[in-house]
Every structure is written in C-alpha cells, then in structure tokens.
Amino acid sequence: MKKITLLSLAIGFTLSGVTNAKVDEQQVKRLSGELTAMGATRSANADGSIPAWTGGITELPAGYVAGTHHIDPFPNDKIEFTITSANVEQYKSVLTPGQVKLFETYPDTYKMNVYQTRRSASFPEHVYQASIDNAGRAELIQDGNGITQSAVGVPFPIPQNGLEAIWNHILRYRGEALTRQAGQATPTASGDFTYIGFDEELMLPYGVKGASPETLEETNILFKFKQKVTEPSKLVGTALLVHETMDQIKTPRQAWIYNKGIRRAQKAPTVAYDAPGTAADGLRTTDDFDMFNGAPNRYNWTLKGKQELYIPYNDYRLHSDKVTYDEIIQAGHINPDLVRYEKHRVWVVEANLKSDTRHTYKKRVFYIDEDSWQIAVTDIYDDRDELYRVGVAHGLNYYEVPTQWSTLDVFHDFQSKRYIAIGLDNENKMYDFSAKLKDIQFTSRALQRDNR
Image (tube, rainbow, N blue to C red; front, side, top):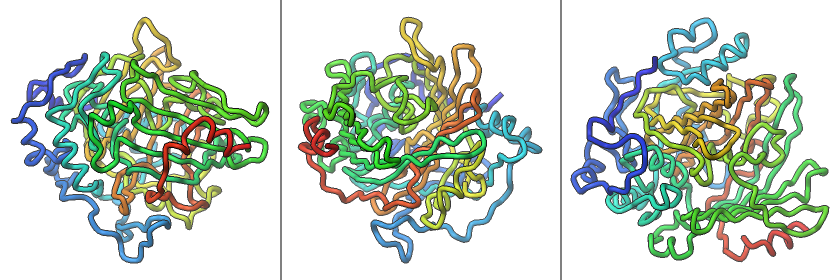
C-alpha cells in the first residue's frame, strides 16, 4: 500500500466534500514560514532525497536567448539509477498504479532514468504575494463549480478539500498571454505516426498582474483559447475557440468550432467533459487537455494527502530543438532515454464519478506537484474499476516568465496499447510569452475570418 501522509488531518482540515470556510490568519502566516507561498513544504524530506525549496530557478542560464528553446540549466546531472521491469517491485511505493502498469505492459522497453531532485519551480514575486492574499479570502461557489475572491495566484495554497486542489491546477500561473506552434502524434502500435500541427493563442486575464477578483467576477472569464490545425493538409481549416468562465454555473464554457466544409463558426456546447479531443483518434477526452480542464461538477473530489513520487521534471532534453519527433515517438511509449525523472512530493486528489451523471472515466486520481500545482500524473479507471489510461506531464521551468509547465503531455491507453503525445514543439518556434493579445482576436467572427 502506498504511503500517503495525511498532512491535512494534522491541521484539522476536511479532506472531502465542499467547505466555504476561508483559511484563517494563523494558517496564512505559514505561507511565509514552514510552507512556501504556493503551499509546498519548504523543508527537505526525511532522508534528504527531496531537498529544501530555496526559490527555484531565479536566473536565466548563460547563453539563453528569449524566444528560443530552453537551455538545460542542469547539463552535468547524471542518471543516479534506472527503474525497469526487473526492479520495479522495490519502487512501487513511489510510483502510481498507472506507472507500474506501464512496466507490465512494455516490460522490454519501458524504463525510468532517475536523476537528483531539483526543486526548480519558480514564479514572479507578485504571483507569490497574490497566492498569499488569496489564501485568506478565496472561496468556492456553486457547489465548487465556480470561484470567488481570487486573482493571479493559486486560490487555495492550503487546500481544504479536493475541489480546492483541482482549482489550484486549473488556475496555476502560466503568464498573461502566449502564442505557440506545437502539435501532437497518435502513433500506431508499431510506432508509425502523422504529425498534426497547431497554431495556438492563449490569453489569461486571471493571471494578469494587477488583476482584481472584482474585475474577474464582472467579466466571468478565466482565459480565452484559440487553436487552428496547420497540418496535415486534409485537416487544415479546422479551428477551435474557447472562453473559460470563472463561475461555470452562471455561464458555462463557451466554445465554437470552424469547419472548412461549411465555412463558418458554429457554437459547440459539446466541447467539454468526455467529448473526443481534437484529432486525437479517440485517445483522449476534451477534459484531458492540460491533464484536466473545465467544470469539475461531474465528480466527487477527495483530497487524500501527500505522497513522495517519481515524476518527470526538468525535462529539458525532451524539450530540446536538437531532438526530432522521429527520435521522440516510438512504439508503445515515447523514447525513455530522453526523459528525466525525479522524486517530488505531490498532492493526491481522487475524483469519483457522481451516481447521477455520466463520463467515460469512472475514477481519476491526480498527482499534483506541490511546488507548482501542475498535475504530473493521472491514473484513469473505467466503469469496471480497471486501469484504462495513465497520463504523464513532462514538466520544466519556462524561466523567462518564470512558470512551471509541461513541455509534453502523454496519455497511454492500456486497452489499445497506443498513446497520444500532445505538445510536440521541438521542430517549431518556441512559445512567445510576450505576445500582446486582445479580446477582439477571440470572437467567433475572428475565428471565421482567420480560417477562411
């Protein structure tokens, strides 16, 4: 059985259900002491394998030029050991059931190269302060399907339940706006694939420096996202626009799809929950994007506590423009020699499908990095209570912002023995976090105009 430390019990917090009680002043003070502003344990673990957090990456590596792929800030780190199917038994306490299943499914090729732990996650100072400010005022509304009195930082750095923890992931800081060229692949069982390219624009009003809870509640917009397919040619002309709301009961997610066949943008209320992801060959749901997104109202959420876990971290080699897609994509799983694993503490959040609703996934367990609130791994179960999929986010610090985010999200389907890799950008231009985007670019009319 996995060792999950129920830290929340020690300070008297409720681990399941929804509570609107705000964190008191005494707890807020912990965010400047034993805890970081993001709510992570500041100190090292018992044996020192997870070091103390000392600020993460605060300086750009020598030679880095903004707008280019990120230089590995730890180029001299060596592999400390490798987990394989031959020795996985001794590491089960620091792996998820889904991770263990990968070794069972691909015993001859799957492995984890483990490096020393670098707690490299960092954010701007105003994000830390906003998170501290949010801790004493932010509340869930509409049975947890909306949020109030929160802006810029994570709303609940000291979460009291599973809903608060998943909202921290949804609202984690990723800058104010960005444009990116990236793509995905859904290789066959033999490893053959067609690269599907996207141009994407993301505007994040919630993360804008100086944003106030009052303004956000008035507009009721968390972010606006636009995506168009750039290749292959048969899919060019497909595009998506999403307006994500702060109170999803007051105004549910708004979405539009442009289809070249009808040459106009259409409202798409089904772009949510378990609707198939764009060009995903049935290997992910809409709410798998970014590991989890959208309204949480179809699940009961439970905060299980914290656990030490081996997760992808500082995956700069996988992110490098010196690596091609052909080198990354292999049969069964991505190239394990390009992946760096480290031991980190994660929050464990379990989502169980409500009896009066439906979703392809009956249960999901999320393992969320304590330093960033980025979901690192998610184990997904079907209606037979069997492992159906496992999702893995390959994280790194985009230190020009700075923000901790993934460079590649991979979802493995155990039934088909296939996977989808989302975010391939090695052969494209790097994200532009300095992009100046405007609301007028995120209308259905703009979606139609841009794609005609």
